Every structure is written in C-alpha cells, then in structure tokens.
Picture 1 (cartoon, rainbow, N blue to C red):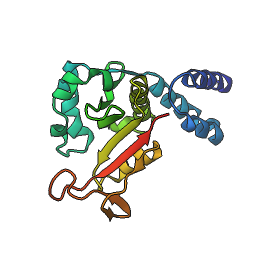
Picture 2 (cartoon, rainbow, N blue to C red; picture 1 turned 90 degrees about the horizontal axis):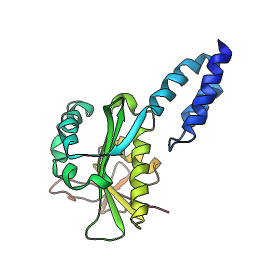
Picture 3 (cartoon, one colour; picture 1 turned 60 degrees about the vertical axis):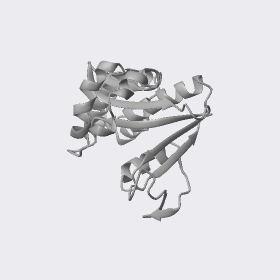
Picture 4 (cartoon, one colour; picture 1 turned 180 degrees about the vertical axis):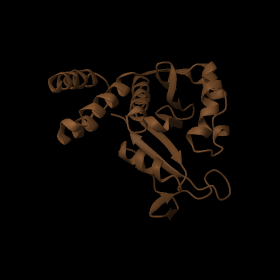
Amino acid sequence: MKFKVQDKQNQLIENISKTTVQYDYMKLMIVRGSSYHKNFIINCERVLNVKIRNVKSSDFSVISPLINEWWGGRQMSDMLPKLFFVHFHDTSFIAEKDGVTVGFLVGFLSQSNSNVAYIHFVGVHPEYREHHVGKRLYNEFFNVVKKNNRNIVRAVTSPSNKVSIAYHTKMGFMIENGDKEVDGVSVFSDYDGINQDRVLFVKAID
C-alpha cells in the first residue's frame, strides 16, 4: 500500500508541474513524511481538478450570491455589477471544479492608459484558499496582459484588508506611496470618497 500511495503521489507531482500551480505545498508534504501522503493526494487532486475559463454574462447570476457568502456575510456584491460580466469576457476568469465555481477574477485593460491593466475584484471559495486557485487566476490575467502588449497591472484595496495587502505583496505587487500611513502601510486618503482611504498596488509584468 505504501508503494501505491507513493506512486500516486509521484504521478500527481508530474501532472501538477505541467500546470501554472506553484507546488511549495507539495514539497512540504513530502518533507513531513508518509503520514501526510493521504492529505497530500487529496489536496493535489483538488488542485488538478480545478479548471480556469473566461467569464460569460450568465456567470453573474452564479457569482453575485456567492460574494457575500464567501466574505462571511459582508455586503460586497454591489461592488461587482453585471456590466463586468457583459463587457470584460476576455480579461475575466472563473475557476471551476466539477462545474462548481470555486473562484473568480474580474479585470480589464485600461482604456485611458495603453500600458496598464487593472484587477477589479477577486474571490476564492474559503475551502480553496490554500490551493493556489487565486494564483492561477492571477497568472491567467497576467498572460492576457502580456498578449496585449501591456506591462503594468494595478489593483486597489482597503487599508483594513490585511489579507489582501499580504497576498498582493506576496504576488509581487508594490505598494505605491500615498499621502499617509495606516498601521505602517502607505495609503491614499479619501481615494474613493470621504473617509474611503485605499492602498494602491502596482506590478510590472515582464
């Protein structure tokens, strides 16, 4: 049985290495030893079964109810109106497992700056947030940016969203210098209106 598990693990490593998924998690499971093989295989299979595709207009009715649910009941769905699903198919993506939505990224190419692309909204099912679904979605967007001969990606978040700040910096985004600091992070005061401070990110795409 031990050898069968090891063989399956090796095959999963080979398959995942052919995708855009980063597999630091896999290496950790191997280092920890055979007692982790079962969970390792379950999590690897979960990653491999996730497919990425472009959004369709009809995805709005699926995604919109999930937003508040994934954000723990916070009222966030108004930030993603249907127009994004209608007009930005080529630069927005859905992550699915067995036909069920587990993540999404909505972005667009700037109409004002021919060198810039913007990520508007990203969400990942809570059970898939440790399985590189977000990273795969970002990489799909980066690929489209490069194909359109653009090399700057921008994004914005709230100073209170520590998870988003940490994630974007981990993904290689730089925080732009604002006009004040909040908890050691540079922010732009009143960026989205009175008392609506924001952290601005920028990333150069090679």
